[in-house]
Length: 218
Image 1 (tube, one colour):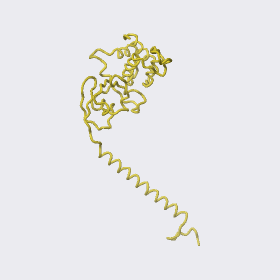
Image 2 (cartoon, helix red, strand yellow):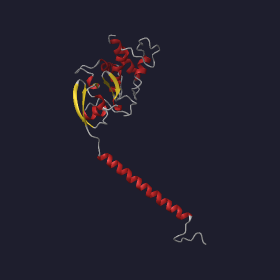
Image 3 (cartoon, helix red, strand yellow):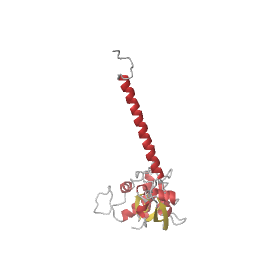
Image 4 (spheres, helix red, strand yellow):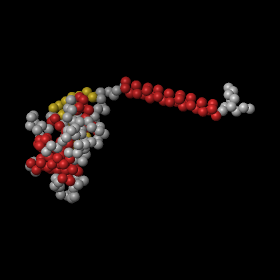
């Protein structure tokens, strides 16, 4: 029998390959349709909204939010407090740092619903009217910024650093955790290491923090 003759019932290498290609194509089509269907269901079925009470910069705020809303998005998108920046949105750059009950947190990694009734302070809440916070003034005086995108997070973090140091909290750079550490260049650099400045204004940032630390009463 001629192996190259194409009869309706003859199985050849060519017909097997053709059948496999058709089956693979159908499988891809089915999976793509399933994926599109899943996306449409997700888009059309949002989570139930919740009412969240927040206290931001000394003012009570009541928001209706998707429970999955991050604190960062609640501040920026719902309260128009855009001083808090969205950088990496993965908790790595520190641009979204705010103060919650006096302690610094990364607002892109926490949900707004988790902070009901907490005292939240953003960069907009540090100044007293037209009077800058001492840390804000020091950053300006020391030219501790270039593009300025990271600066709100840097300043909020710096304010928390001084509070942590005053409370005697050690850092990874502290040589003796039994003794309150001096706020050296190494200490400040380590404590501020979670805030990235892509312009590399780090020397001036450290200088600004040291200025405020020296001016503040112990």
